[in-house]
Picture 1: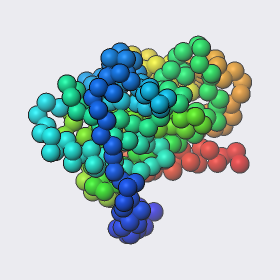
Picture 2: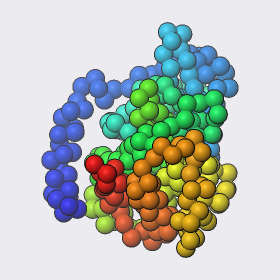
Picture 3: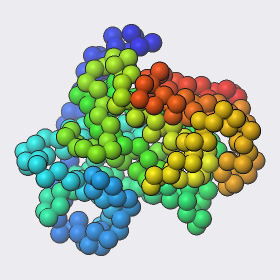
Picture 4: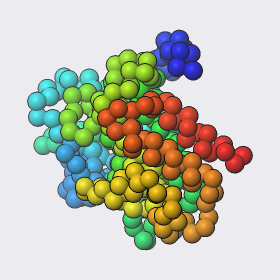
Amino acid sequence: MHLLIQKMRPYLLAWLRRSRSGPASLVRRFSYKDMKRATDGFRRIIYSNTHGAAYRARFQDGEVALVKEVKDLNQGKDKFFKEVQLLGQLHHRHLLPLKGFSIGCKRLLVFDNIENGSLKEHLNDPLKTPLNWNTRLQIAIGVAAALEYLLLFSNPPIYHVSISASNVMLDENYTAKISDVGLLNSVGDYVTMPHSSNSEDCMDHACGNLTFQLGVLILELITGQSSEKGSTDLIQWIQESRFRSSIQKMIDPDLGNNYDSRELKNLLAVARLCIKSGDKPKFSIPQIFRYLQKVENTCE
């Protein structure tokens, strides 16, 4: 399978370049004044990390967007514009599309509508509609699909990406959208995707971190608990040799009994595999993606 992907990648990239030609790859420049007004003076914070904050923006015409601050004081404007253009060329169902940018006191990226907010809101906010089992499974599969795209099918295949419940957004159909794909010289918790199209080159420390983040996200989907802010409870639990004996206590109460037990066990096995891989992953992101697809198909 990996050799087939390698052989097909040049043809896929050529097709993607043709499909992106014209206005579809262009991004809009927003006025800084409009951005400040739409975010209520940058007070509508969705999440914040070492790379900057993300804000919810509502424009005067009713349009809603996610606005992300870019913190990189060493980056010149020309390089910023080039990298904005590269981000604008990313097209995947599970990546939040870049709509535009703005430059003022802050450098801002403007992303597409986020109708249902973040995954974290739905897992932690009692006023939000609980996510059903199939939706949670589809979110895990969708995030893995986006990571495979960034690794194998984007050109150039090198982006910084961070995965957490805070920066996975949900559209009106609860389709997962990764929002925290960074610029090429960002730093911090981002994971740098390798240059090579060979998935075996992803068996290193960087992709080990990425696989680990995916495993943690899957655990959050299953348990409804947060692992952010340094919490290690979920990670310790899944690494225990007898974790299966306490599965029923760990499942998100919002699910009740409305889940498939075989899918649950297989999904937990994937999460455990991701987290135990650590710095030395035994499986690549494309392989993890295939495992998740098999979880969905086990009961069909």
